Length: 592
Ligand code: PEP
Ligand code: MG
Image (cartoon, rainbow, N blue to C red):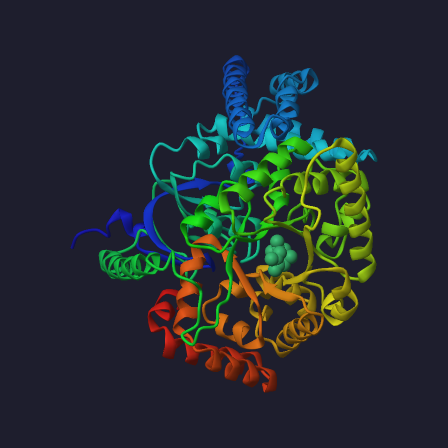
């Protein structure tokens, strides 16, 4: 009998996570190992020290070059100030104290350079972190970032190589940091799969916006896939197949072709209105993260931008007022005459930005986030308000405040907006004097006091991502409680209905821009509850439009009424499923 083939380990492996961006795709894996996994300890001989030092010097040169390239790209896409964070990284590479300590430890401990570098930089970062100085303790993050780049270069593979991928591939990572995301070469990244993350994490939101299939919350995918392994990703169902068997590839290929055909047909809806079969027109806008995404929104047939998450502009540095104005104008011009709703920065929560002076918080989602952070720094906030106002000259821009939890915050934000207007008037700069202001309704207290807030604004936009998290006490980025994250929970249905009714009583409108609006199954429910606008990730626009165009308003109303009477999230979801199966089975096929 033939011996057992030595490639028994090469059997197909099926791994499950949370599907956060749909699509079926296969390709070779590019594995970005967790930091500590890549550090192996080896003894060396005294005679090896010069060689190890030479390797270190080479890694320094390569890292310096990669950072310069990244800095250059960031300057081009987001402006000079955005790229300044990398100056600090470059300076750290020149740090004499770190270098001397590495040489000393190499000579005394006689271990390989990877281990020595890891030890020295870890100690250095820890010392910075332990200092009571906020600025210095934040530099610890930079030291770790630089150490990781150096380690990857020593291993002959760099995280910056993510931006220089020669061949299209599937990224397998423990997590993706903001720096890594900023450096991605999007045309080469076929899909992501990460150990950490959840549907509303930063990586997931970006993946959906880019239309890149993604699976997150996989726990240990980065340890179970080897570089170059053939991988098949099903981003809808959160499945990753490593070394898929021929039958699996064929089955998925048939599915992919069928989905592509449906999407092709959906593409034809681009210039059609999002109107129900009985003539009810529902504006359908897109959510964007960066100015360039406005293009995708328009190409997908969105009625303007319902949510511009401006905090993504602040990811690598603080853009100046002029740079912000340019970014906002770029979007306003691209979608004109349609509207752009610019949300003031929602920094904090999972969008922690180390270069802004933010303390580490035990519970960041409940802490110093969004409007709280902005109202505490009025000059910083007003710089953004002035930039938004300056971008409003086409009269197609609206302002929206995030994470409002009481009416005082709205009144204070409006007061600062009035000051920002006066400052521009004094400078002789034009802006839309009647610019409309709205608020996100994403904290239960805001929903329940919508009647107090309504007199101060012109619209509400329900952020279901946070509303679900805060109402049900379910951390939106914690994969351990994903099952409890139920947008059809009776509490959520009641809060949405209450918000919409109050807005109508006050003669203003309510949109939904949370991910609930992008779920084709839940669209008829939101329509039935009386929502006036939906805003969804750009690639999701055609799907949602098709659902609306397949629906009768009366069917939606019936569904909404039944949901209000229902006592269970599962029952509501079941009814939503039944209706979608009846009106748009093709769409159900895409999302199930
Ligand atoms: C929301 O909370 O639903 C929302 C749209 O905002 P974000 O996801 O940016 O918190
Ligand atoms: Mg939110």
